[in-house]
Each structure stands twice: as structure tokens, then as C-alpha cells.
Length: 210
Length: 210
DNA sequence: GTCTATACTACGATAGAC
DNA sequence: GTCTATCGTAGTATAGAC
Image 1 (cartoon, rainbow over the protein chains, first blue to last red):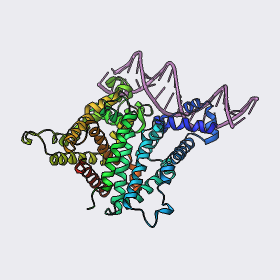
Image 2 (cartoon, helix red, strand yellow):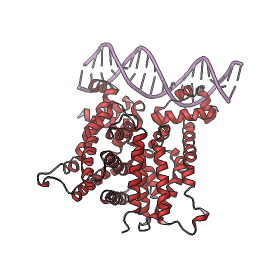
Image 3 (cartoon, each protein chain N blue to C red):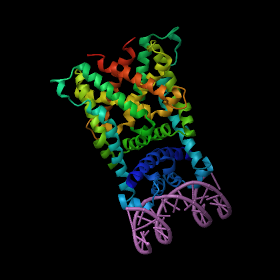
Image 4 (cartoon, rainbow over the protein chains, first blue to last red):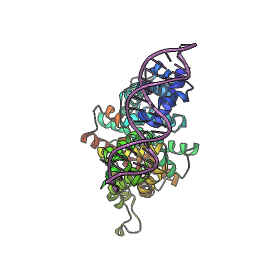
């Protein structure tokens, strides 16, 4: 599909260079078409940018769907999930998210998203509403169960902290490589980070009930 | 100083738009000089970019110096720091780092650094060797004391997780605002996040000795 | 040291052929 | 639907005046 090829190239280029830095000429060349096809299909550079955001959101949703769906209330859960069960599910979802952060194929999505996080445009709404919001909501719901001692705002802050430990695997990539004395984060390093995430998160979630 | 004015403008523009997106014309205009002054003082766009990285590293070092220096071995520490003392110092430094992440004036530095983290260039060496490395090393040294049960690589991974919880306050800014239902992260939200960081980090550091 | 003027390249948008 | 051709604008680098 031509439009998908254009969108893939757009995500890659916008992610690397930002909206201003990326060139529609180059995106067209990378997807093997003429620049005017972008005008035709997406109405211009801005339209392409927004479409790229939706494209990313759709891919993330697809990828995280198994983990997020597994956390929806099941019929056989009974009236409420136990603290242990909620903790277990949350750890599994965080591990899935960490896996996504460590997967090299998601690098271009992340570059795009990180720009939007720091300087949000209309594209951020598409990213949050289309993908990130659902992950936050489902995590928060389980944190409420796992840590009933926390007030709502504290539970939200904890959600942020837990996601932060996943994000750093991607965002701090260059530093992580230097800290671990490797040129790139491979299978072995990924496993180490995931295990440490699991230990830390488990400690926080089961930890103290003040 | 003209060169400092140029550097400040360079950090701002390179951070927002990236190397390719930023324009030396605009940087010159913002610092009230002619574009050719950049060529004269820094040798061109690339030289300016590297100088901007060193400029950031110097500012971070200055800013984190009190917290990092306080963690150097003191004469009155005796032969070794206790677990409790190491934990306390580490928590204080993390809180200082979180404060920097939450301070709006550091936004442009962070944008610059985040680009380099994901797609490192020669500028990354200047950032890491000039500022970030020292913070990592001093944190790691205290983690070794606070968590003697961890192997060296696990201690490094834990360093990454702890910094991740600080980073997310800046990197995930737009999402954090949405999660906490505010238009921007103010004093109140900053205090909430720092407290949650402290609780989580304390839990991980004191937590379990397997 | 700092400026203006200029050469050259690449950008986004659009019109029109097929 | 997809292409080529063209227009106006803006980028970096550099030469040379002061």
C-alpha cells in the first residue's frame, strides 16, 4: 500500500528530524513516490504529520493489545481482584511495555513521541487518546488495588514512576549503554534491565503499607 | 559576553529543532549578532553545536555540584559509609536531580540531551564525560553500599531505574500533565512527584536483602 | 571582531501533463 | 492517482568592507 509506505517513511523522518527538520521531498523519495503524492493523499506536510501520529498510535495499540486486554476484568475474577493478582498482572504489563521499549524496531515511534511529549502539538492528542491513555488507565486501576494505602493522586504519581523505569530503557539508551559498558543494548542487557524492573516494581507494589 | 549569548540561543534552538532543523541565521538573530560571527567564533554550525553541548555540561555540573560533592567521601565518614547513610545521601541526590528535571529553566538542556541520547553524535561524549558520568558514578558507588546483595551489573541496572524515575518527570511531561489532570506541572504536582520518588526509591534501596 | 553582499543549494506548494 | 516543472522562500558558507 502506497499510503502505508509513505506513513512509515514519515514516522521515521519526522522522528529523526522533527516537523521542521524533516523534508517531504525526502519522505517521498524514501517511499518511492513523487512529493506531490503527499499533497494529494494527506493534504500537505501538516496533514502527513498528523496521519503519522495516528499511524503510530494504531501500531502501539496493536502491539500492546494482548497485555492490556489481559488486564481487563475477567468474568472469573469475581467481585474484585486480590492485591497479589493485581500486582502480578501489572508486573506482566510493565514487562511487556519494557520489551517494547527495548525492541529496536520501535525506536522511530519513540523518537516521534518524545518530541511530542516535550513540545506537544495536535498530534499528541492522537497519540495519547489512541494508545497511551488506555495503558495508563489500566495500570492505574491495578495500582489502586495493589496499593490501597495510596491516595488517588499518589497512585497516579506512582503510575508515572513505574512507566519512567520502562521509558529510560529507550530514552536513556546512550547512557545505559555507557553505564553497562556495551556498544549497544543486546539480549543480555535487555534481560538484566527487565529483571531489575521487575524486582524494583515488585518491591514498590508489595512493599510497605503505611 | 557575546559568545555566551550565542551559546544560550544555540542550546535553545538546537534543543527545539535539532541540528538540521535549527538555523544559524535565527540563532544569530536571537543573540543580536550577524550570522558570520558564528563562523568566526565557532567555525561553523557543527562547531557551534559541539560548543553548545559543552555549555550545557558546564551548567549541569555547576547546578548539581552541591549534591554531588556532598556525596564524595568525607574525612569524618570513617572507613566506610553505613547502609543507612548511603541510602540517605542517594535519596537526597535523586531529589536534587528530580528538582532539576522539574525546573522549567532546564527544559532546553533536556531537549538537547534527549536528542543525543537517542541518536548520539560527538556531542554526547561532551555531555556524558562533562556532567552525566560523574552523577552516575557517585550514585552507583552509593548503591553498592546500600544494596550489598546486588551484583555489579544489577547495581548498574538499578542506577538506570532510579534515574529513569527522575527523567520521566521531564521526558513524559505532557503525559504526566494529562494523568494528573493539570495543564502544567506546578509546585504542587512537583512536590507530589518528588515525594513519590522518595518513597519508591527508599523502598527499593532499603527494601529486600535477598 | 563584526558587519553586508553574494553564490549555491534545498525547502514546500502548486499547476498541469498523462 | 501519479508524475514533472516551476515559483518563491530560506538555508549555509564565504568573500571582502570597515
